[in-house]
Amino acid sequence: MTTENIFSGLKVVDLASFIAGPSAAVILSDFGADVIKVEPPSGDYWRHGNQIPPQPQAKDPYQWHLQNRNKRGLALDLKSPGAQPILEKLVKWADVLIVNTPHPGRKRLKLEYEDVAQWNPRLIYADVTGFGDKGSDAELPGFDITSYWARSGLLSMTRDAGAPPTWPVAGSGDNATAVGLYSAIVTALYRRERNGKGSYVTTSLLAEGIWSASVSIQGALSGAKFYGLHDRKNPANAALNVYQSADGTWFVLLVTPDKVEAVAKAIGRADLLTDARFSPANLVANMPQLTAILDEEFSAQPMAHWYEVFNGAHVTFGAVRDPQEVINDPQLRANDIVVPLEGAGGKLTSTISSPIQVHGVDKVTAKRAPEIGEHNEEILQELGFDAKQIDSFLESGVVIAHREAVSK
Image (cartoon, rainbow, N blue to C red; front, side, top):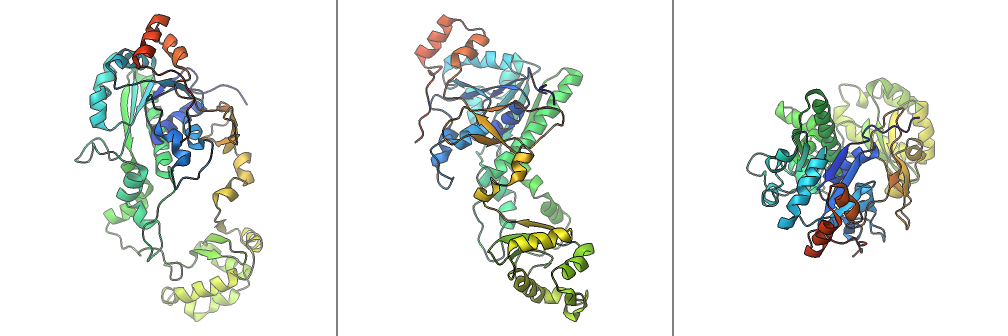
């Protein structure tokens, strides 16, 4: 393996908050980009995500380190007129600028593409919004629960029949969107390599949600007939269903037509293959009966037994795991999905790597996220400000002195 990093020398300014934009910057940083995290004097609110129910509560700000590892920190009051000279130099320094402030706020802060591109024509301006840049809802704020999950239709489909919509895992839509934004950024960087020009690239939580739900949304566009919400005891297909083993483990079973005979024999129920109720002509009408039979069979043996049976028949299945079980899965460390985290302290000794690997290239070692304004002086000096100017920024409150964030 080589220690070469693909984005070594790439300069990124992360002005975004919470998850989607910062996570896109993390992917760039994993491959060597120099990322400056700019946050307001009070700090990004996501620093306290570890104390916001229903997020898993912890003493350590684990979300902050996940979304902002490897970055340098600058605490800058963008609402102050005195921030403009610093913003201008940041933009001139940067290859990539990531923004997620809603457009009304962006206009007030003079952070729109037209405001900053004049300072750097090679800039990749990366924008993530809730609902897109056009249309009547373009200026609305959006979180993944509202834009990615609810508005896209995903939340109406990820539940069983008769159950109300549930609350999805925090950040799941944001992190999917982060990969989309990262893809937009590297596409623009490739374009810049070819023509030397910067770009304004964008995605939205809504667009990413629609893309995730696209099989069903495309079906709606095509006038397809929908089966309705999944009903475990009366599924559209008993071979694609969720079952429970004797030790209480739920598992997802996916038996393709070419595997039906092998699975029936493997579970000791070859008789089902000749049962008239389950012939092609009668199967749909008797799907609840078949499901009940499979329920009885699967509930008679522990999951370890079914692992052997399903693996022996080469059938696709997956035991449903909770987070405490997931972190003990040996596949995570074998494939560098979970990696060591340096310097965070407390119980934060490992973190989740970004989901992209390039064979032959090592990612950088994951290091803790910055404290509020931790690298102020270093960054301002690098931008060309002298000691007197830096002192004036601190005295006026444009830049806030470095301090440790206190979890609330």
